[in-house]
Amino acid sequence: MTYCLGIKIDESIIMLSDSRTSAGVDNISTYSKMWRYSVPGQRQFVLCSAGNLATTQAVIAVLERDIKTKAPVNLLTVVDMHQASEYIGRVSVACQKQNTGGGPVFETTFLLAGEILGASNGLYMIYSQGNFIASSEQVPYLQIGETKYGKPILDRVAQGKMTTDRAVLCGLVSMDATIRSNLTVGPPIEVTVLTAGSLQPGRYLKLEEDNEYMRNLRLTWNKLMEEAVGQLQPLVWPIEG
Image (tube, one colour):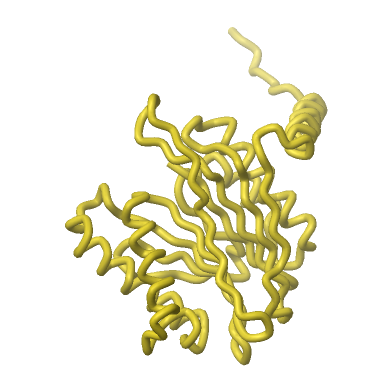
């Protein structure tokens, strides 16, 4: 299992992913689930995945081969984020059919964020079937993998008008909640911020398991939650009898 998250706000897109891959309680490995493709000043992409590792690696290999061989359609020739999502969706479906037989156990879902010169930036979820959806003003975030534990904080806090720092913080709290609730999700945590309109690779950070900032974030968030619960009025029970 894994957890990847994208938040699209007015000034940037924030992408987060964990790095734990588990094929059982006695077979836990660390693999990056975030890939970045960049032509500064022209186009920027960040791709995250959740699902079968073999399928994911096959898709990434095709994407990179298409760039290297200058295939007619590749991440360096698509004209907008919609076409980029269509292209990745087709590659994903083809890899499932060719390399794994396309069974449900071999499925992979992707999050794609980026911007192309002359087109709007965007955040997309690409399903294993090849179709996709985009984030919206009403729902500025998209999740893949183990989504349920990190969703409540996003529902309460995430909005398009928030600052980048606040969005990163919101994403890290969501990731930490997931890590605490599911042992198959774990660090290192990778974070990339793509500033809207900059067409630059953006800020990137990898937070290891012993990262001091994450420890302080967890302690501070726990304290805030305890204080909030302490301020709530107790439930008034009806009089018996």
